[in-house]
Image (cartoon, rainbow, N blue to C red; front, side, top):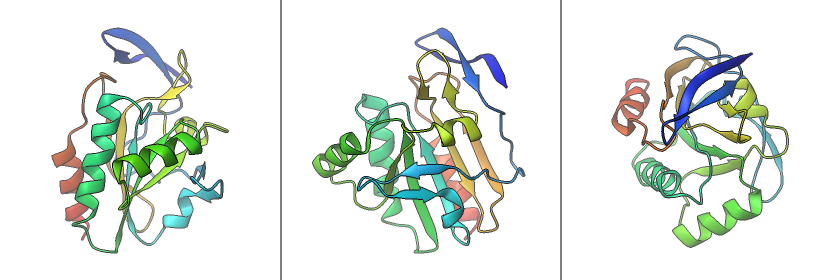
Length: 170
């Protein structure tokens, strides 16, 4: 399903592909690639609180800041919480970024191969084949408890709201 004018990038309307998810929906599974080229599925994180930070590209200013912010916050969360950042960047670019920026408290996963996550979570930008900016919080039973599709890709998400949703599940 396409959602025309669902987001903008610097004011220009773009189309999102996939269904818009809502709080209470089951969290879709998606197949992603780790930095060492292993395949993982989001269902592998069942049983823990999962914060998913979707970014267009970690090599851009806001995406970098978002990834660093959630990495910093993850260091203060219990082991019952996992934080992942998902982008369409190649795993090699993600590994370089994480090494240079000391991203070591979260997992940064690639959706470049199949756009499995972007399609399942409704974040695939048709015109650019990148993910739009979004944040999801999934409870241990696999139900979405927080959903934020950032309407302007060049804007930050609500970090406080996402983290409050995580803390509410602890």
